[in-house]
Image (cartoon, rainbow, N blue to C red; front, side):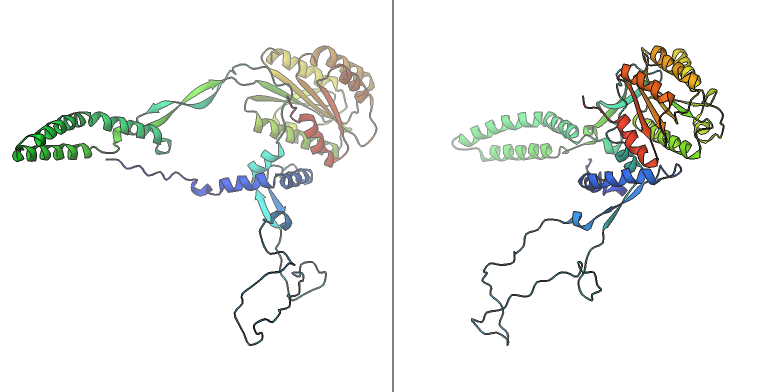
Length: 421
C-alpha cells in the first residue's frame, strides 16, 4: 500500500513569494535607486546587486483606532483618586520625540528599512521594459532551442512531478473495476436475503448463512487498497523544438586618438550595458565586436573592452567591415541585424560623406535598427551632420549624444525602450 504525503515546499527559498511581493510593492522606489546606482558604478562592479533603503513612511500599514475628540463612555476600575461621577481630564497629546531637532530622553522611532537586491533581481529591474526594435524575422536556428513541455503521463518519474489528480483518478478506476464483481454478488445476495426473510415461516439458518456471506464479501471489498503503487502517475515532460528569433548585434567602438580615457570609459560602459542586456534577454543572439581607428578589426569581447590600441580616425573602415561580415555570414532573410556605434564624432572630413553613402546604399537597407551614440562634451562635427541626413531618410536610424556618465543610462533606455504595439 502506498501513502502520498505532499511535502513539496520552497526548501531554502521559502521566502521567495514574499520577496517577490515586496519587490512589486516598492517597484517604483527600487527602480529609482537602480537607475541612480548604475551611473555611479565602475565597469568592474556593474554586475553586482544593490542595497535599497525604503523610507519608514512607505512601510506604514493602515490600521483602525480612536480618533481624538468626541464623547466616549468608559468603565474604569475604581481607585483612591477618583469617585463615581468625576470627570477625568483628557491626557495631553504630544510627539514621539522623532520630530524635534534637539536631544531628548523620550520618544522612539524606526530606521529606514534596508533591502538588498541580488545580482539577478538588480539586472531584471534594470533591463525591464527594454527590447530590440523590429525583431520580426524568425527561423529555426542551426542549434535549435527546446522547451520542456508536458507530454502526457508515465508510470515512473521524480516524486516532485507526481500528478495527484491523475493518480487519484487511476485509484478510483482500479477500485471500481476490482469491486465490480463484489457489488454484483452483493446485489444478487440482497435479493435472495429479502426473499428468504419474506418466507413464512422464515428459514433462520438460511438467513444467517446469507448474512454471513454478505458480511464476508463486504469485508473483502473494503480491503481493496485506497491507492496502490500501480495507480501513481507522473507528469511526463518532453523536449519540443521552438522557433527562435535569430539576431546579430554589431558593436562598433571608436578607439582613435581623439577618444581620450574619459570618452572610452563612457563608450565601454554603454557597450557593457548593451552586452548585458543582449546576453540576458536573448539566448539566440550573436554579438560582433568591431574596434576602429584608421583601420577596423573584428575582435573578441576581451580585446574590445580592454585593448589599448589607438590611432587616427577613419570611421568608414568600420562600416565597410560590418557590411562585409553581414554579406558573408548573416543573410538578411534569416537574421535580424542590429548595429550600435559609439564615437566622439571626430572623423577625417573627407570620410564623413563616405560614411553617409555606405549607410544609405549598403547598411541601412539590411538592418532592423541602427543606434549611433556620440560622446561629445563639445559641438557636433561633420560625422553628426552626415548621420543626420541618414536619420531623415530612415526611421530605423536613431542617434543620441552623451555629455557625461550620468547620461549613459537615460540614453540607453531611450534607444532600446520597448515600443507598444
